[in-house]
Length: 190
Figure 1 (tube, rainbow, N blue to C red):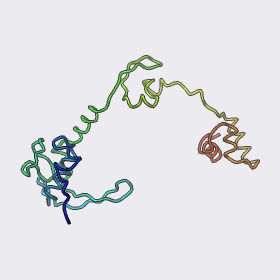
Figure 2 (cartoon, helix red, strand yellow):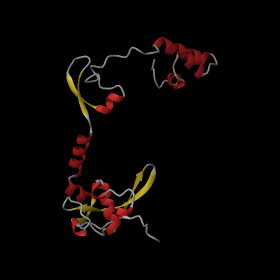
Figure 3 (cartoon, rainbow, N blue to C red):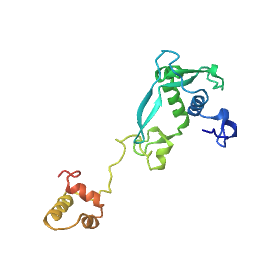
Figure 4 (spheres, rainbow, N blue to C red):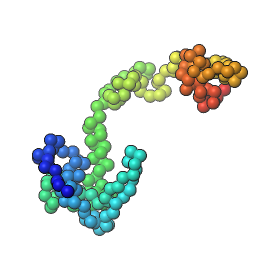
């Protein structure tokens, strides 16, 4: 099998030292191959099966871990570790939360009901969130289209006459799925 001529610096997607955490580790696996055993606890490596996007995938249990944090291309700067030892060495959970908190943009707002100051993630503002500090302060919805009497009337019409769910939806200005949920008593348990 012929190797690609676009390796490393010649490849159009090469980022060099600016590559991400996962890319640097994958690069070392491609360069040095698979490690046979964990350098710390001496567990032998094996393929582990897992589900990814609905398909079964496999990964090698021993990963390349960086010793110095400088991510050099030299084999002396890397050690093969199992997932547990690698996480301990990198303190991976702490790093993930630090990166997550650093990348998420937050904003201070005042609640529309109690006027208390609260912090919200900016992405929630795009979808209409962020006006109230809690569920308790959120006002009740006034745009309810159906009442208990209308729901009982819908069930009566559907059972007594041969009216389709689509037609009932048009009559009461709701979707066919809403009519189905009412008839099958998934919603409106009256």
